[in-house]
Image (cartoon, rainbow, N blue to C red; front, side):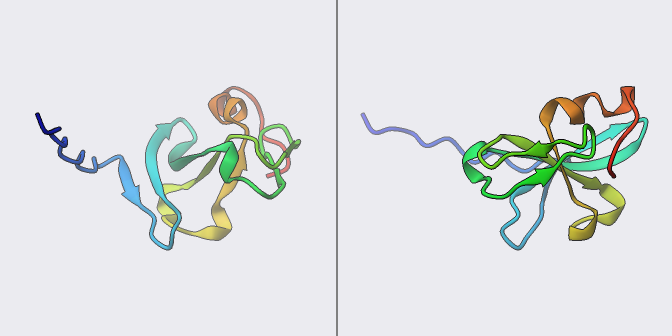
Length: 98
């Protein structure tokens, strides 16, 4: 019996195409505003980044989060790379180096 292909999941309002090969982002709302957020797999990372949450380096090959204010949709200047844990706890502690 032939395999049935499942229809592609339609993009929700929380998933926005970024264009220019930047992948997909979801919208997150918190006490610090509305953000566009994208998870980055470790295999995709080849550069060093500085996390604004802890001010430590994010090493190449480390999975992390890229986030920027939703009001600046697509603005490269506003994008920041965060450790996943730092992003999750950002509203509970002061930011550094941002």
